[in-house]
Every structure is written in C-alpha cells, then in structure tokens.
Image 1 (cartoon, rainbow, N blue to C red):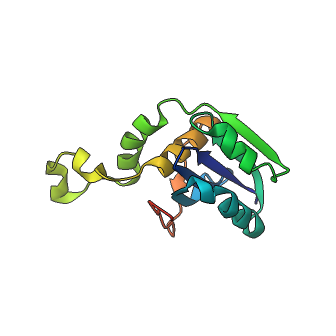
Image 2: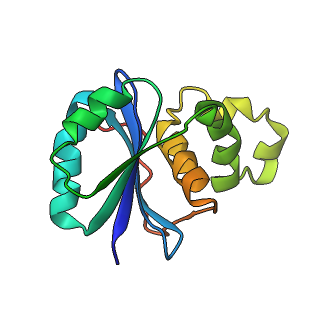
Length: 145
C-alpha cells in the first residue's frame, strides 16, 4: 500500500511523519535538522512506496518544497495554523499519563520535548479529516541529527 509523508517545516528543524492512510497508522515520526530533510526523504522514497508528500504552509515551506522537487508525484501544501499549540494536547492523547504521575502538572511531561513530529501528525489528520494511531513498533524519535 502506498504511504504518505507529512512535514511540519521549520528553519532549523522539521517534523516528519510516514503514515498509511487506509490503515490510519503512523509508521515513523521524527524530528530532523532542516538541512537533512532532502536526503532523509530520498532514502524513504527508495525504501517505501510513497504516493504523496504533504507540507505545512508555515515557516520555510517554499525552501523545503524546493528541496523535494525531485519527487515527481503529488506534493501538497496544507494549512498548519496552531499545530504546534495543538500538539501539546495531542501528545497526551498519544501518551496518556497513568498512575501517580496523574497528580503532577501535565506541562512537566512536555518540557524540553520537541513536538514538531506531532505537529506533522496534526497536519496529516487535518488534511485527511481523521485520527491516526501509532504503529506498535513505532520508534517515536524526538531528534535526529
């Protein structure tokens, strides 16, 4: 089945999600330096059947899109307004607080967390108008250098 890549572009880092729309599953969710995005996507395309790339319309959208110009299938620019803000709430939907940790303020659990991959997930969910789940084997990396 073809998969889709979604990118939350940024000046220094990008969130990236690899998902399967028909299964509503996320298979990769990472954050990487913006200068690494082209090579990372090239490697993904070599290993996976990618049908489209969805890029948020925010910071550095045009620059990232130019880097991905080699992709000859569909590249879509989509609204990403408030995704970073919404990523905090979505984080707790994906990783609920359990046990006595519930007594600690929620903000403590997301301090120093990069939420760009979750922002990319929100862009995908908004575009597809449906929620996605994380694959059980998903390695949810917060930073790839």
